[in-house]
Image (tube, rainbow, N blue to C red; front, side, top):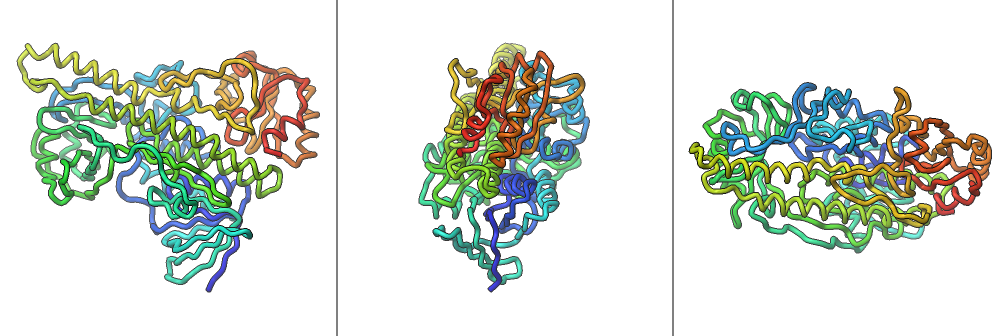
Length: 546
């Protein structure tokens, strides 16, 4: 039997597993990633990449490649509520095209001041993004990939984690790893071995977007000609017959429709032709590329994210209803948080307790994000269309306007969420405590703050982005106390902690961060802020659980 020793074994190569491998690979940590699927997905899955995820991609040099996939550069990323595709438009939330987002020349109905980030959200299918992540993971010599391989068993022991793997060639492989991370989805083997379970609400039934759903992936050149003159990324249909949605996949001829199955209805019972005709408003020639079912209505978070040498991330740790599009994005945030911590412990410059902070930081965020998605699912289900919504009689105009306004309020709360995406703040044993009130956690409003635990706020300095100057690992941001850089560098060297020093004399940075000095973690969250009198060694020990 073949054997492999590695530092980190990653089970599952979806976005979470691949991003974790990249975070480890860029630091030279030996890791092996095992994935059943030999190829990336070829059918639609996650749709929306958050501003925070785009920032993580930017840190790894991937943002431009990700923004370049999906819809054409000039295709609007609007969200529309309408009766049918060829029917009455009720409201439209405007979003920038990829080209406009890149230059911030236009950001649609997003409030410019509410999104202080070098990266706006992007609408691009997971099936286009995963190949980019696979390619990036392949660049790092310390990453060994096993696509088309299945982990058959796993055991956590005193000397490491043992995995039995069936390789793509059918040959068995025995793996010993220092740690294992389960990025292996809702039916996670790693979560089962850990002895933990999900807690929360599972498969809640709703009038719409609750229970069994069907995704209908089609190709149709004719459908593309029926789109409104002002195109959109997403169309939500509300009429007296059936609710549903349509997502533009490539902006040309590939689309994915989503509808809810009736209780007890099987996927094979669906009349796909009738559904497409109903939602479009006329018969359309199309080719069915894929038909699958999935379950909406989950608000589930694992009771533990770590047990011994085992960790879980992504869908293995939390399961979402897709409203607000935060499932995949929460998974990427998990990977970035855990990646640097595993690397720090393996390289010997952090204590094992640093790994405990993964759960204490990420579990509350998973609960926060799933709860918000649930609230948006409730809001969407309540958008029952009024009688006569499609009637051409002018007497119904006012009810349509009122209903359109309700849809507008909902869609703004679902997608204009800078606070949910950028306002993540950690409270753990490796984040400094300080007096004062932290910024309010409001999904629809982001308050830039240097409060410890918060995401390091974006500052534009001249034509540069301060964020881009941060080091790969820890960064000391000096905003007026340049003489202390030597003390911090010496303390970091004595503790073998990688530390970059970045000087910034812009008054705007000093005002936003609220201190002379700020210690920025490898995941671009603030570990500490203070002045020149601080004990550098003590702060660094705190931030690394030493």
